[in-house]
Image 1 (cartoon, helix red, strand yellow):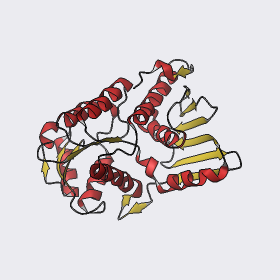
Image 2: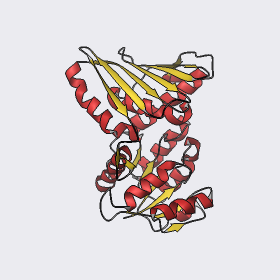
Image 3: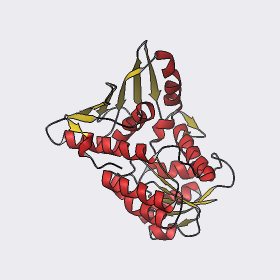
Length: 290
């Protein structure tokens, strides 16, 4: 099975391509084509990971392949090439975030559903070993009441990691979002109608790890996530999300519903709206919905 990668400006490009082309995700799978906005950068990553061909346009990358991975670093760069893949009937993985604009996310999942194109978008952190173990431990603690997630970088790029994990645990249906943006951090509070609470502390200029703490009725548990958890030098969480994509290719069934993929983007966007409007509480009813 031949795959195309769109986007060379993220470290996910060399990680995903390296995992696939070294056979770590399974046999019979290869990234054969790459497009990147910076041709020199794309050629360097193709040489590093054994990609056969660097092409001049996204649509050229989608020729003679069986599926597409859109790995551009920034959300606004995802919609156009993802729609091109859908138009060609190619199964599709879109890196986090699916889109920055909830309306684009809705249009994309609806187009994929209409065309019968399997689509997956997820944070690899959702499939991190420590996070999966945390989720497995939750039933022993009774009803989960809150999730507190600390992460680095900026909200527009990394906030989706926290929100994706919260949805993996709480599911869809968040009610409202409040974000306090300071010089060093964003503190985002997400409320579900039944009182469950997600709190994300996005600490800029901090260390690169992530911590998740889940509080249940009878105790708490936590997960520490580190890119140092590797297989053959590649972050293990990337291998796990690629395996989810491959399972979807084999079954045609995405592991995450369209509703959940869209709701993650709605919450991330609501937090940004709150942060840029004097930290007012933003009801999710303000955001476009599937």
